[in-house]
Length: 217
Image (cartoon, rainbow, N blue to C red; front, top):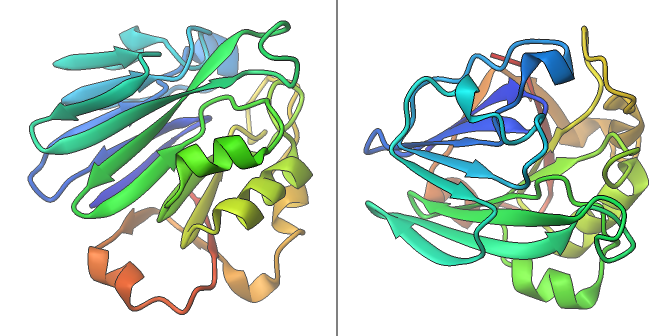
């Protein structure tokens, strides 16, 4: 499977069959730069805010999971929606957030959406196991760098990809990615245009979490 980053919390996940998922498409007017999402088979929306649920950014799609929780299947893609909160006060400030877990080509990808609640044993139990973790690190509206690192330490993914951080032209009051990266050893950090993954990549892993910073497409 392949993973491309469209910016903010939006990714394109493409299975070897050609089926694709776009996560959390965003409104350029809210984020400060264009999403440029392609047509896809499935779109998932973690919550209804315009920087995560702007379906007009996707030119064509067949199925939307808009905050739904539970277990789903779309043409061989396994999708689980896991309930969580957008803040650390049981949703009283910013409401609910749906974490989406994908099973594609034998690889498990976990998209944390705008997770704001603190890491707890109960939530971790519902999320594991994880091969690839897509997690916000910018703070203000979500968990910050140190809280994201706690999730990484507890979930122990093979790969973690930071998202929802300030980059060029981003107008949101969130932090850059560097505070998160400083919490890891330099040799664990990589940068690339996109990821091309296979189940065997994880079967032969050494247990070390790789931090991969994807370039925006």
